[in-house]
Image (cartoon, rainbow, N blue to C red):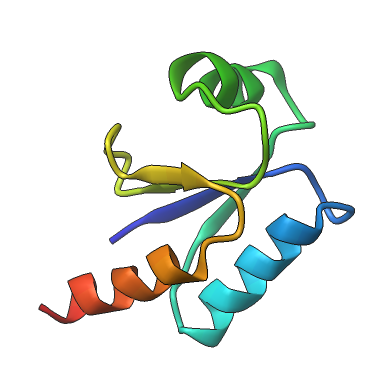
Length: 83
């Protein structure tokens, strides 16, 4: 399973909470700061349709993503990986 978190940087409290919850659950993830380039920002806003960070994308699947701090969905990743 690959998890990518598109973040708005260290000043984003929901991003920080998402990172901490993923780390606490032992889920490895890659962080992409959407402030660093147009391609990541365009992907999040135009392709996925989000205007808020963080955006979490699982396994690069277009239907498996969400925005905001969602501990319930992070916890489901653990359940899904165990089955």
